[in-house]
Amino acid sequence: MTTTTISPETAMVYLMVIVSASDRDMTDSELSKIGETARTLPAFEKYNEENLIRDAKNCAAILSEDEGLEAILGLVKEAIPETHLDTAYAVACDIAVADGRLEQEELQVLKVIRTYLGVNRLQAAAIEAAIVARTRAL
View 1 (tube, rainbow, N blue to C red):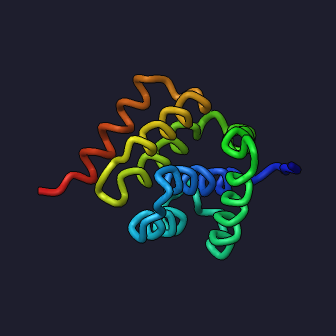
View 2 (tube, rainbow, N blue to C red):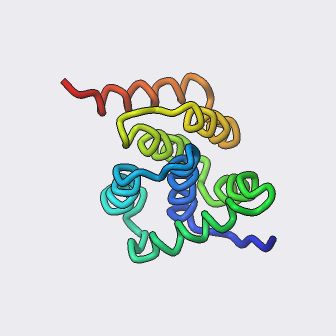
């Protein structure tokens, strides 16, 4: 498998795709949230949204290969600056809760992402708590 360096924004798209695909059911709400995130989050201000479908397809192709998840995580870790690893984890968490439920597979992938990116448990807990608070319905 040949891999090349990707942009930080593409790396975050990859994270969103692997979380969405983790339970083998990429829901409309997850796909919508990926698009919304790429359009509105300041971390994506330099990202050309027209690349979203291409980047998602590239991620899916890599993911389908042997050790694809590890390859994606290697690309992500290389592309995202250390100062933004927590942002990348938050983006992944946002997609996990986008459809209103959190599946076991998504939790496992989030743990792998957190560990791989080196987001410590305290940071992860704060990010997770903020996302739960922000997405809780009355």
